[in-house]
Length: 323
Image (tube, rainbow, N blue to C red; front, side, top):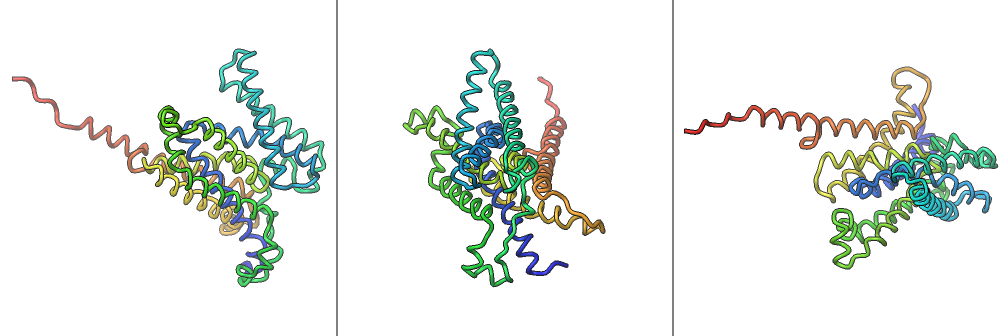
């Protein structure tokens, strides 16, 4: 049985960080999934790595602003390379994207190996799996710390950054929800009505990069990819309304963050095994299991419901012969 002090020092900040990372990516992921651009989230989680490493080389510190700028530059470089490969190599866009994403991530891994990033918890292992377990709230001294300004000022930097980015994403979605909905479902109509669809697309790319960068250090690329796709796709199986989908995806993302961390930290202990699992990896597993369950049991779009509908249609009354 852990003490309150241990919970607030280790588990609470890690759970909150995982939940905010999942939520930030899921909110953006709703529009990527609906526009069939989920690969952009995958891309960002790969191409931002060399940008983050170069930003660290230039500044010597891990900070949200230079990391985001480095990630955006890397995204622009990736876009240029994809277009060049597509045109010069006569390759279809999917293949060009696959080449660029893989190569840029590999370059980022090599740069990490040659950098001094290990001293600041930026290395290949953390790039893949994150460092949720190292997100500690050293200023916590009991439940009173939750309302103590001095203790709250000592919250982990990753948690604060993710909370701010998540709040900004939420505000942007609320303010521009109509524009996002119109551009998502009918970009041609949006352009005809005077909405700058290309600027909305650019803004979506920037916000996607911001979410990926904010989550990258804490949870790694695996969880970033999973959260961009799994909670929105799960919610999509359960509703045809965008507003409901956004709320459901947020619920699933936060739930996966909390449940995944609890299973990683305490799951094996509950069955008598004195060990723990990687928290980011388990959060991604929980999110994926949620999507599988939705695919199977969703009341309208699930596999079982569709098969029952087909069976009822096949077992309907036979057509009457003509007189």
